[in-house]
Length: 385
Image (cartoon, rainbow, N blue to C red; front, side, top):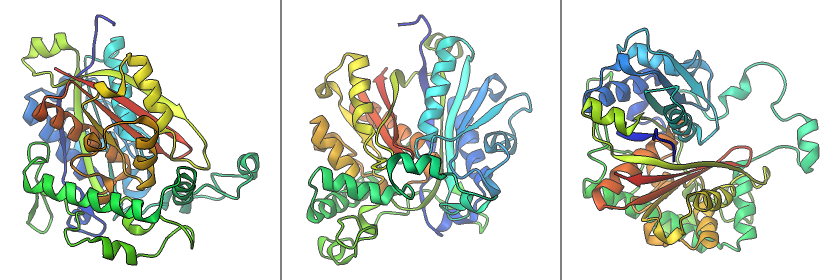
């Protein structure tokens, strides 16, 4: 291991707002600025010491364009001397932000770096970027290689269900469990320490995730029609929610943490990437997880808790089938099906939740992985400090 390491010394997030919910009043820059201010306040770090803000965002159009990371730190009142960049690795954008920030810290390019991201999907709808300019991001030179007319994540979820033999009942059961776990986590106050209360333009305050459907039942889920195939198993109930939210983490070295009186929460132990079938699109967390475990020299049984993004229910179900991880340790506080999936903010949100759970429950190792557009995935192993 390098003499320099990368440790997380602070991590916060907004509540996750449901589509057209209360957070829809908030501009993406302001949501991002809110978590940046809270991060500085909770850690006590002077923002002028931050060498870079690496911000994830998928739909970099309209209100989320012009390097939103830079706009966010300026709106937060941070010094003009602090730089920023904005990253797009699709749904894993802010998990990739953590990877970039950690790499910069370990290499010595950064002493302090902030990683995070945002997506306000109520204000910048999914697919909004496709409406700008002429042409398509998937010309025939690309699609002809794979014999398809285009790429669709929902269809990819159905392909996963078919390949791993997942039934509609299994998908619905998983979705119901996500809501139940998220509701239990909220009721037990397990998210309280990681959430930053957001003051809204209408004068109210939001401090709790909005997406959980407490009245969801197996019977109600069974009534929903498949979205992507008439005979499919994926419904709106088995899909991640369109959401609004932001999250941020502060990274530095153990030596810097000691020097500035900061408490290291977790070390970025291993960070890897993987690519897989771009048509199925959502299966890359499986090879990414194997790669992370192999590189770390750890068996899956050594990982105490997991965050596997619930883009669609077949993703964690197939991942579980291939990795042999303990289902009780995977998304124990619910996932994107219940809480929501604010694209560019999700990676940092999952990691914030993961760090707080590792601290609360004493897990030495935690692993996070996310499927991403194009058949990609990040996987990160954190070590408790």
